[in-house]
Image 1 (cartoon, helix red, strand yellow):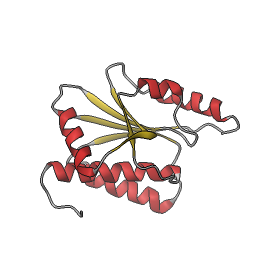
Image 2 (tube, one colour):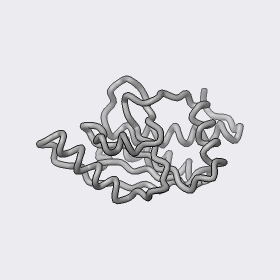
Image 3 (spheres, helix red, strand yellow):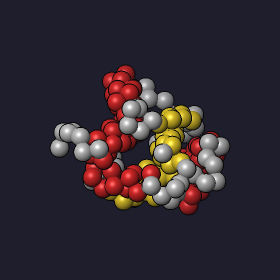
Length: 153
């Protein structure tokens, strides 16, 4: 399975960047992932920022990509449920799964409409850059679950 993670903005906090690098490294033997960072808009106009960021994200999408959008109003999954969804995707014949973490103001309507699945990490509000870290950690956990390997419960 080809897996991509597209996210808006740099991960500036050193400990978060370090955790992302660590989980990316742990994940690589199980599920190699391509990470793409797109530039965040200046934020002077939230609606304009969402639109601009969606356009930057769209440049990296192919028409046949399955797109999972990280979205607060999406479906929350347990770690075993995520593992099962990824297993199902891997055997579906689809060529690439792209996960998108939109910008600080959220996802533009065009991204929401394009998404094949909307995934919510939680109803809680997190610092934006933490979403990348949580996604990488959960992908790693799902890979371990899928292989019946021990991982902290």
